[in-house]
Image (cartoon, rainbow, N blue to C red; front, side, top):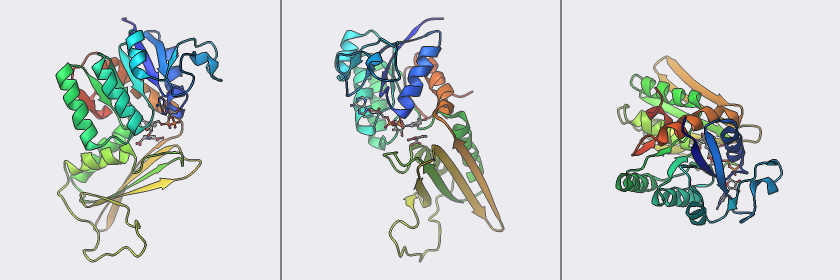
Amino acid sequence: MKTIKIVIAGPRGRMGSEAVKLVQNKENYELVAVVDHKNDGGILSDFKGFEGIDVPVYSDIEKCFKNEACDVLIDLTTPEVGMHHTKTALTYGVRPVVGTTGFTKENLQELEDLCHDSSLGAIIAPNFAVGAVLMMKFSQMAAKYFNDVEIIEMHHDQKLDAPSGTAVKTAEMIRDVRESKQQGHPNEKETLAGARGADFDGMHIHSVRLPGLIAHQQVMFGSSGQTLQIRHDSYNRESFMSGVALAVDTVVKIDTLVYGLENIME
Ligand SMILES: NC(=O)c1ccc[n+]([C@@H]2O[C@H](COP(=O)([O-])OP(=O)(O)OC[C@H]3O[C@@H](n4cnc5c(N)ncnc54)[C@H](O)[C@@H]3O)[C@@H](O)[C@H]2O)c1
Ligand SMILES: O=C(O)C1=N[C@H](C(=O)O)CCC1
């Protein structure tokens, strides 16, 4: 099995630290460097919790790619930083696996064009948990039969983006099959701004943020006399790692942008 050389951006984050463990534990993965806005020029083991992992730390991703031969970048940072990292990776011939959420439609288009021009693969997955991907697919199936749907996503209160990437992706997948409809009463009025959540093609997305939560989503469908609820819960961040590994193993074999893990799950 060929070794896949990996750089992780955001290694000290909630997801990044789990990704470091994944890469350390997989026989054919090699962590060659990390990108962190602190400790430029140091080594990862300078940080508490990473004892024995003596790979270089770079704050400048360009410098990292100039100095280190690598195949894949795993980015788990913030939307603006993640976009910069992803574009830079493609410029240096490195294939990105992006878990960072909050990318805009325009961001995705720009990255798709970059992948096309460079013939490099990239995978952007708003949710790496296999159960969450199934929840999205089951919701898409249900939307053929139920026109009315509300998406309730629930996350920890340190999350920066709302709605979640998963909720946006779910809404996009539903939109692809649902007959467009403005839901609720035509004369409904919010007496408190935001009460009906965000509007996506006439369906509504509600974002809950609470300490104690990790990542959860409930998709509620309703029609005369019945409701259907499809729910997924991630109780820890290990739940995302088999999806990260699938994305790493796949990205080295493809030459286009893939948006969503459902497109590479068999
Ligand atoms: N796709 C998925 O399955 C999935 C799952 C969980 C989280 N996420 C997303 O992943 C991202 C990270 O989530 P998190 O909970 O780990 O957040 P976090 O805040 O714990 O981690 C983000 C890390 O990025 C680092 N960072 C910030 N600026 C940087 C820079 N310029 N260079 C390098 N590193 C930098 C921070 O130091 C921090 O350690 C978010 O966008 C989140 O929505 C995706
Ligand atoms: O913890 C987060 O932040 C998560 N973000 C993703 C999203 O925005 O959909 C997925 C799960 C966790």
